[in-house]
Image 1 (cartoon, rainbow, N blue to C red):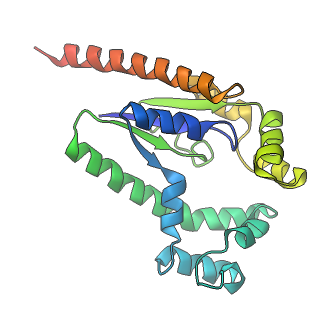
Image 2: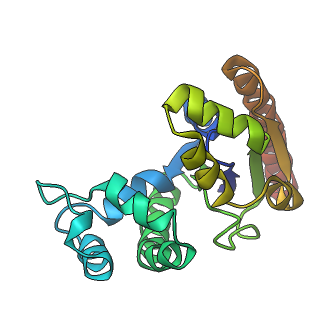
Amino acid sequence: MQRIGLTGGIAAGKSVAARRLAELGAVVIDSDVLAREAVAPGSVGLDAVVEEFGSGVLAGDGSLDRAALASIVFADDAARARLDGIVHPIVRRLSAEREAASATTDHGAVVVHDIPLLVETGQADAFHVLVVVHTPAVLRVERLVRLRGMDRAEAEARVSAQASDDERLAVADVVLDGSGSDDDLRAQVDDLWDRLAVERADELAAETP
């Protein structure tokens, strides 16, 4: 099994890369999806978040009000660290369970862990290959404002709350340029997939007596 770490700053294009990898046959484990599962209604994670931040982070139906929680944690580094301390351990457990299930089904699977905060959570050395989708921070802010309708101050806060471009690039084994079109990024993913296939073939040949 090949374990690939995939990361990139908000609005860098990581989701485009993850979708293309899934189309090519990779098992993509999306940490954002797992993070939502971790605080789903009725979960221990949601109970812990409410205990830490109060009932004001709940919507009327009892689910997590993400906007209300974001307004707290993106304005306070200590609050964000407390939230991470609740959610990240649950996400890692769920991720390990998904990976184990994939390995049971297909011992030769390519498992891609799509983790926005991979660098920030100290997981840079946990994968066979670490792929970073890189788009300069200034362009990512512009995308958040133009494409997602964020206020510029909020967009800048979201970007600055993550690892810097230099910190991600320093640990990357492979860098994909996300500053161009989606088609261009998908073509880069295709090239990466071909290289991974060659590496898998070489490893299998080396293991064959």
